[in-house]
Length: 284
Picture 1 (tube, one colour):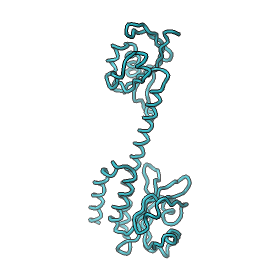
Picture 2 (picture 1 turned 135 degrees about the horizontal axis):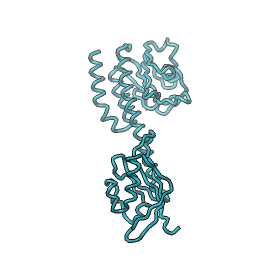
Picture 3 (picture 1 turned 45 degrees about the horizontal axis):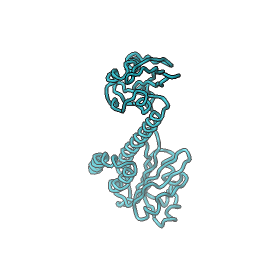
Picture 4 (picture 1 turned 45 degrees about the vertical axis):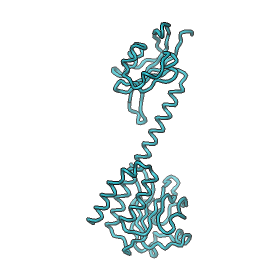
């Protein structure tokens, strides 16, 4: 077990570098390095669709690995049992195991003798099943099964984080696109009082560029003191208003601006800043 612990430690040390390459690289790393750690001839990762109870070959290394990628099937066999129960499965005599189905072997010409199947779970979500096939030593040990469980859990955690980061980035991009396409002006700041949104309509109304982005909100005082006051009220007192007006001079011209102030919330519902939505109503 000491050698296995060393292998697991090295696997964990090198995992961040693989994580930086993305989800595909992580599953590939688990299959390749995992096969070496548990000392087997082949390894496959099956992506799970738990709502439809289906598994799909996502990564496969071994004699017929390339032929299997993309093949999908309902929960069945050792990997299906593993997915359904969400617990590791160790089978050292596949020919005589009631859990094993020979459908894949018949179709591929491969002969499965021993199997370790481990559920890849992160944050309660079943991402898939990792399967290690045919021990080089003839039979898998409980220690090797435990090692497989640990490295699969580490990889699943990093894959889940990558998915979460991608989702947040997509939501942020979508939110930014929505703000930039508003028919009215929008200026927003984070909780530290730094301007994080200054959409094109705001630039048009105040006849400036994007020079205030990433600057302290107080610097907007030279542009329009009322904007600073409205954002400050939200940040300091959690005071929001709807359909109020103020007057300010823009390049020597007096404008009447109708506005509402809001809390800005993140994807988790927590307040992350304050904003002002406004329109030029001078000529209305």
